Amino acid sequence: MLKAINWMLNIQTSEGYKISEANKIEVDACDAIGIILKGNAQAEDIEIQPGGSGQVKFLLIQSDCYDPKISYSVNEDKSNDQERIKLDALQLMMGNGAENLLKKSPNKLFFYNGLTRDVTLHILVGRKATTP
Image (cartoon, rainbow, N blue to C red; front, side):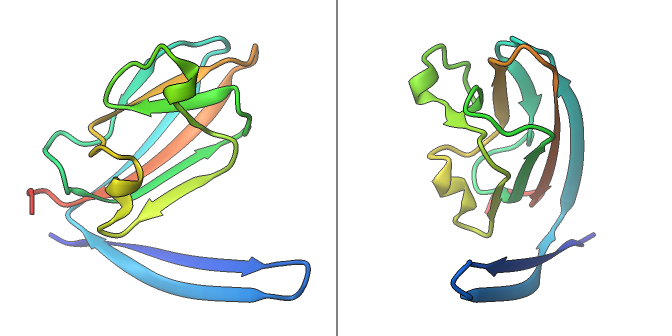
């Protein structure tokens, strides 16, 4: 059964430039994941999808703290901090090209917390149930 993720985006610059858009993405499955990433945590892995490539159509990563010391890698534990994606702001990827931004189809995300405090993460994934 198809499920819909409805979204709305409002952006305004200090110079007055405005963008407002709303739409929906239809997916077969929607997973909401909430975890507490312990301070100084290394390679806390989160399963995003069980299948092959091309299934993730929506990926939102939200945190109660954004800092370059919080990062993640896609599908494999990256010991080199330079190879990780910094979680210094809310991250939203949607549409058929979203997986291309990560360079790999995400099955697992490995999170690292270089802060001494715990961080709460919320991840919302919308995906197709079959490979296109």
